[in-house]
Amino acid sequence: MRHDLRKLVATTGEKLGLSSAVLRRILNHTAPKTDVLHRHYVSLGIEDVGQALVKIQAALLSLLTDARQTA
Image (cartoon, rainbow, N blue to C red; front, side, top):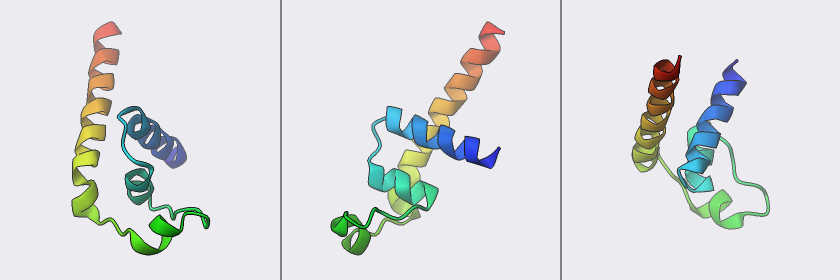
């Protein structure tokens, strides 16, 4: 169940055009070993991804509202 939620957040973020670096930070994933820039130099904190989380939340809320209206 938790994996499904993480997948939903990642898919929603991707559809919203969020960067892979931001999505990795939200999901607490590390960059691939071949991605030296993000693995060693780029460090994103919660303040960097907060706006992305708000966008994902709004999109999921919209999906839920749409689902309730069609049910």
